[in-house]
Image (cartoon, rainbow, N blue to C red):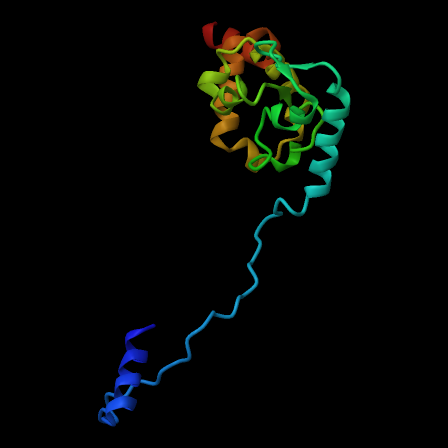
Amino acid sequence: MGMNEIRAMNAKRTGYLPPADTYVEVKPSGPKEKKPLKRSRPTKRDNAKEIEAYFATVEAEHAGDCQCWECGSLVPDKFIRFATAHIFPKSDFESVAAHPSNYIILGAHCCHDKSHRVDLFCKMGIWKEAVERFLIFEYLLTAEEKAKKYYTLFREAAMASFPALFPESITHQLLTNA
């Protein structure tokens, strides 16, 4: 209850009304009318069916004998979805959110959280597999997505780890050293 409502109740109870120049109209309390949100880009709901189909495909492909690709621990079939780690996060890189190569299986209880930061990710044994998969879908990333910090950090770490996979970096190094 707001201050104006309290003043109005006191005025009603005591019979005192403030002078007309200080009178404030009291608005009724209650929930405000909800306005529709303006959407500047597609939301998770827009591609929800595509993401559901993506996870269903991954689950079907790995059902039966699924293991963490990093440490080899068993991943039960009902937890495969939670063990599916996107190489490039689906929330920030929507153009490749449901790409069939944009995932690795990392146990939700053991290794999954290490893939969220590039500095930790590049120290994992699965790093080369992640970089090779990245090279498959890199061309699909939009210019806005390539301007994001995660992309830059990932690509720089990948080029430093595996320069042979990036022929343009070898050419650049030869030109720089010459």
